[in-house]
Amino acid sequence: MTEPHHCRNLVLILGDQLSPALSSLKRADAAVDRVLMVEVMAEATYVRHHKKKIAFLFSAMRHFAEKLRANGWTVDYVTLDEGGNSGSFSGEVARACRRLAPQRVLVTEPGEWRVLEDMKGWAADLRLPVDILTDTRFICSLADFRGWATGRKQLRMEYFYREMRRKTGLLMEADKPVGGRWNYDADNRKPAKADLFMPAPQGFRPDRITREVLDLVADRFDAHVGALEPFWFPVTRDQAEEAFDHFLATALAEFGTYQDAMLSGEKFLFHSVLSACLNAGLLDPLQLCRKVEAAYLEGKVPLNAAEGYIRQILGWREYVRGIYWLKMPSYASQNALAADRSLPEFYWTGETRMRCVGEAISQTLDEAYAHHIQRLMVTGNFALLAGVRPQEVHEWYLAVYADAYEWVELPNTLGMSQFADGGLLASKPYMSGGNYINRMSDYCGDCTYDVRQRTSPQACPFNALYWDFLDRNAAVLKGNPRLGQPYATWSRMGAAKQEEYRKSAADVLARLDSGELV
Ligand code: FAD
Ligand code: DLZ
Ligand code: SF4
Image (tube, rainbow, N blue to C red; front, side, top):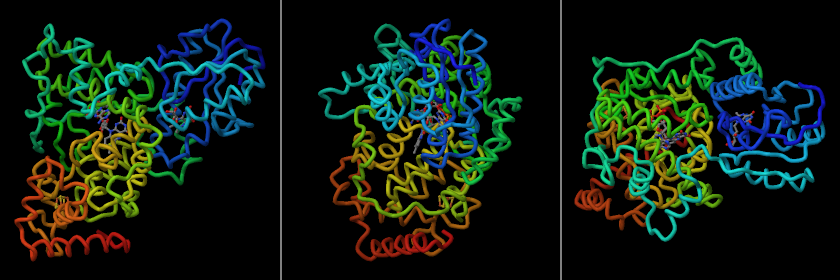
């Protein structure tokens, strides 16, 4: 800790604000202002974050503080173990104000509603001006998103994305999309084969700072989920950029084609595994999109890959943030399907006989990472079909993924995956029986259950749960035009077959509720 010294502005930088171009830093002056960064128990425990997530963030924070110091800033960095650490943002800002008597506090707006609510009380509590500045690190400002959303009946990502393509000029020829189509998803549905050359994300050996953090996390967060080591994540901007360049050179070309594929033992396939870095501020989203566009223009990657990747960042990532801030705080408590089952314990342990779910969860516990289709069509799909309370599903996703902050996790979980917002984000629930998982992966071959059986005790649980879900939720979903076909199939099935499905689903759900191995 630095010696007491009055400063002009106190600049609080949060753990996911590790960007040199941060609005609060841009407003400040290294000669007279002081940066405050704090490791606090409240942030580390408001959900039981995965050990790797805490280690990643503390290490990235400590490295960022070093970088700021090297660039001439005076940084007060409060470690978790520092004597007197009050354990919360509010407490630490108050303590720093007593120590440094600043004239003003500067902070860039946080990524979570609950933190913003706290911050709004600081000026009165501290009797000081507290400037909460716009976060300019996103490609679409919240004001522009609100403008886009105003007056629209439906807020579909695809239309927002087209607008963003036009605005940024990414993959555009005058006012037309390059190649004539906005979206190449139809080319992106190939299952992967084990004999494909499989790239691996770039890993980094822990340095002294990371080792100290790993010891701290091992010591203080033993009760949290997940494996701490091996720890290989990038923790600095330079490393994150190196990892991105490695992805560009080794994996991007196949990203589109195998985007929805899943393969036993292959945790990363052709994904970039950079969301944790991006969300902590170690990478700049627009810069990534420009680099991907350049790789396409130089003929290094095909259009379906470049467009697919850019859509995830320019489209989905910006869109879910807009939705979050548009709809909070009521968004968090929605439960359109009135789902009320507890989250099965195996989400925390990986102990299930369902091979697909077991793979997705155990790699999540190992790496604090699973790719999108595992999150959506395996763990998310199962929770949706089983009728798990969306708020419990939300807490799980927020805890276990290194990239999880509420602004991005909540709309993905509650909206896209659990349909708890009643269809604001997705025009129909993302759900499937075992067939889809079988088509997109090699999991079913080695599973205890049989994906081809429908209602026997050996049948894949997804099969009966799928029909039972449609049946249970008919009052809400039957009128959905995109579900006309499955409901027609269900009706044609006849009463006896329907009853078999209901009974089989009831068996699975009873086993889940009693804690039996499913
Ligand atoms: P890639 O497949 O390489 O994609 C590139 C980038 O695009 C990602 O790094 C990410 O920044 C962005 N991206 C892709 N899809 C989305 C999306 N749907 N929403 C926002 N950004 C997207 N992503 C998070 O960053 N944090 C979360 O907490 C999170 N929770 C999710 C929960 C559920 C239930 C689901 C279905 C998805 C969630 N996602 C979340 C979105 C997505 O699964 C992850 O961004 C992605 O898997 C990260 O891996 P990657 O970096 O290898 O991504
Ligand atoms: C996620 C997290 C964790 C685990 N710990 C800290 C911390 O000790 N200090 C900090 O500044 N930020 C942390 N974070 C990130 C915050 O939770 C995040 O900044 C807010 O949720 C706003 O998005
Ligand atoms: Fe998953 Fe069903 Fe396939 Fe088993 S059979 S891996 S439970 S989809």
